[in-house]
Each structure stands twice: as structure tokens, then as C-alpha cells.
Image (cartoon, rainbow, N blue to C red):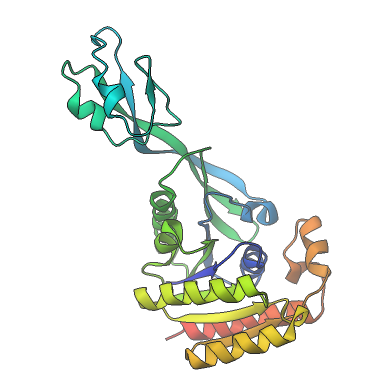
Length: 286
């Protein structure tokens, strides 16, 4: 199978809307929502959950009051202020384990956190693997890797041709986990100063990991001067701009109705996204 990950250097560029349209257009695929901190692809795909699993990751210190002699050493060494009156604040604890290592009476243990859940669901477009990270929990990169691994397993079992990944915004750990090992990155940007700046950052990340990239400028006509600058920049970087999608309120109307825009209305936006998927699938074909 071939894996394409859809990324954006910043949030709000239309990445998830385009992935939902790809779900409607592509054949023989599994979908993966790797934006585990704020997953919203399910809002458009309306999945039925088939499997739900707990995600355990990271550790929190726990003090056994029966063993503790209240020497105060753990409170002195904790650089996060997580221990007070010989009790651990689980929100402040970073799980570094220093208090566990220096406790003279072995009263401190490190307990694994239940950090979220991940799901295997069925949609009218095919299987979807997605996740929900718990409030104030970290290790989103590890959860992203788990989502991708299970999507790959489903694709192998079903002999499916594509894995389509809705990646998180930015360039952090979760993005790296979404991107590494993919066959192609589709970068969605918009003609704003922040969009141009963050496109540069995520392109640099793709180059670092050796992942070929294509660029789509969404809402290109809200500032055509900036769109031309993005096209010029991409030409200098030898990166192809494969689609210019115009601004259209029909996209918002489709979201309100809980449908991918390609299923909601005909028009130029639908045609551009259709052509975009055709170019992406052609690039993935050996």
C-alpha cells in the first residue's frame, strides 16, 4: 500500500476537509486521524466504533504514606513543585522519576498513566483509525505511531491500496511521528503571512526526513499576490504546487451538513479537489 499524509504548518488551512473529500473519492483505502490532540475527522465521516482501546503512556509518582518517614527529601528535589505535604499532584508531576530514585525508604513508586483511547471504526467510506488524547496528557507522538501502525495492519489485512493520514498541524513531535516513513506528504497552506511562514517550516521537515512533498494552496484567491509568492517559493524549492482551491462558502455549508464538500455540491471547489486527488494518486503510483 501507499501512504499519504496531509499536513499543514498551521491549523485552520482546510486540511481535514480535504482529507474527508479524499475519503469519498479514493478507492481501497484506510483512513487515519493522527491529529490526536484535537481529532475532528470523525465529525464529517460519522464513524461507528468497532473497537475501543486504552492508551497507557508516561508515569506519575505515587507516595505510600505507610512507608513514608516524611524526611522531605522528595519535596526538596522535585523541580516541578509536584510534591506538597507528602502528596503528589498528578497534573504537575512530569514523571521524571527523580523522587523515586532518591527516596531512602522506597516509599515512592512510578505508576503508568491511562493517557487516552484509540479506536477502530467503520465509516461509509471505509475503515478509520482514530484516537483521543486525555486532558493535559502528553506523548501524542507515541499515540500517533500507534494509530498509524494499526491503520497499516488493517491495510495489509484487507489488501488495501492507500493509507490516507490526516496529520496534526505544526512541526512538533506528533507531526514527525505522522510523517516518518510515509510515501508522500501533501502540504495544505493558505495565502497568509502565517501560512507562508509555516509552509517553509514543514517543507524543511519533509526535506530532513526525505519525504517527497506536494503543495496545495487553499482559498488562494483571498490574496492572489501571496499565492503567487508561494508558487514562486515552491518553484525555487523544486516543489510542485498541484492545486489552487478557491474560497467558497459551499465548504462551510458542507461542514454544517456533516458532509465532505465533494458530496455536498458541484462546482469549482469539487472539481479542484477531484483533480488534486488524481494528481496525488498518480504521484503514488510507481
